[in-house]
Length: 480
Image (cartoon, rainbow, N blue to C red; front, side, top):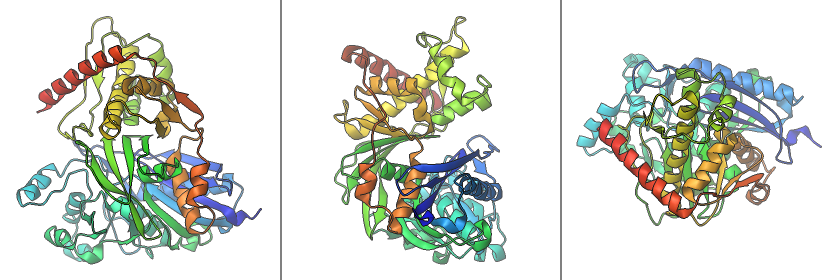
């Protein structure tokens, strides 16, 4: 078996970077992971150190290659997937000119309001106004040479020594400067924002050789053969290639997506259309309903409150009580996504009494994440979804969370054996570009390792849903 049949997948997420070496059978041979630091300089601000992010990415790649007992010269390709809409400004050699402004960052909310008054619709969780903010910090001389990018284009530039300045349609469809129907950069909007077209990357397929890593990075040049947003790469690895299939990726956030094929026919309230991927020059679309805070809730319990020492302790602590016993939580730490699209809402924990313990709070927060994901799912699939939901991502390891999700939605939830689907998707898309895999082969590999069937009766579910809707309404009123 040729070692050149192995592919390196990179998944740079909101809270960590993962690299995995995937063999010709589609199985992960070795992987490495490191958390990445986030900073919150002010309420609503979310940043990463761009230099450390690039260094950490290179380090986990080297670790994964070494753990697989391979050399970089043995790899057929590398694929990159990433947290979407996070903004970076860098120079012609791929060196950052400021921090990464995370997709959750809301510092440009006022700027978005100004643009809206001018007839320009851009949201603060898109990259466009984040680039505007970063460019304003640069001198005119440095600004003239600056490149604007999302994480995929930044990492491609960093790994190639600046020779690659590209991004795919899935990533750019959430930047605010992309014409969704035409599939091109919106030149008029870019001019209104004061950007130069030369600053922006060229748009490429999600599965396409766009260049090579610089030899000094890993010790050999490797084709860079895939760029895709993390949710999109995960959906590809989940085998959700047919129109109408729905998938939930439970990472830092929880993103529910429905494959729309090559045309958009409807837009349910609280959802928005994106490019799912571009393959062989043809774009497919998806509808997405976002839950802005999912796995990040567990990290807040660990890092913000110190309730647990590690994330593995979350589920046992929640199971130590039979229920939340009146405690409830709406985990809107960065606002409410689908189906409300309310960025002003903030998290609330209620129903506390002297009998409440940390276990009740943890259980209430898990319940809250599950009900938020069920709402987003139902926005796309209907009040009682007819088909099972495929889930992936690190937070999908929590059995209690998935059982509560199945109960809240009244439909089965399917979980694969390998949860980290985004990194697999990056590898599969890269392998596809160099002829190792086909779409059919990827789809045929997917199997459910466990199915969570709903255990709650319809009457109880309806009553709990009505109570949940009252709590959501109260939270939105408090945050208005």
